[in-house]
Length: 320
View 1 (cartoon, rainbow, N blue to C red):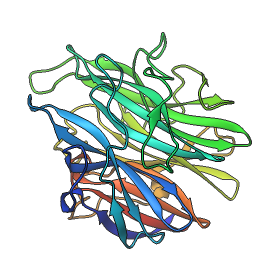
View 2 (view 1 turned 135 degrees about the horizontal axis):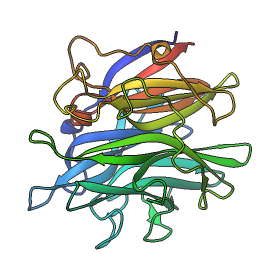
View 3 (view 1 turned 90 degrees about the horizontal axis):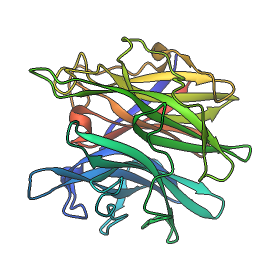
């Protein structure tokens, strides 16, 4: 069993003035670790005149022990895509990666649909100012829907091992038709791809690598991976396909899997030992996790109730 030292909630977006007229929400926190601080990127939301949300990227800088906020971004980190592009209506999440002297980031772009709510694809951006802002390599995605993955490719998380880039991502299997009480429901699973340059990817299409524990319509999201003592550890979130927004029994929880080869994964949620508390900001939901290392210590960031509306928390791995 894993043992964690929980820090509780460490960032509440309602306590800060966020850029791009955004408010509330600090979804999918993901890190860049610098020599003397940790930068945590997250998706926040602005409201259009129509009442629809736009997902924007912001960041907060923390001390390396995650105990002190140093500052919050006051500029646009990356503008949303142009008319008709895959990221026109939002970026959620963004996964930054230090690659030698360069900083890349993999984005999940959102665009609205008519018959269903959204379509998503994965893009890539780069920074030449130490992660303060990012620019697109091009207006289109690097991974998108395809013949065997017809909907919703997203949530790309990239690590580089032995000169090969590995990406864990989600692919949509299907949309379930709307009912009298529910809008159309999406079903998505975790898969992986590899690359030699971080731009062009080879994937085994529609190969689900993490088994289901609920049923065939279990939804799996936000895979995140670290290596520790020769074993690769993945934390992700999962939920029921329907009635998940306000029903804690069917909402997001954290799951765990491990691997020795980065490709074949054994699921063992109980080993994570990360359950919902009886009360508080994360008592109804835990979602959008992020594992990262700081000076050989492993930390976990995650969102709580209402899909990260009230910020994110942290924990430090004490033992496995």
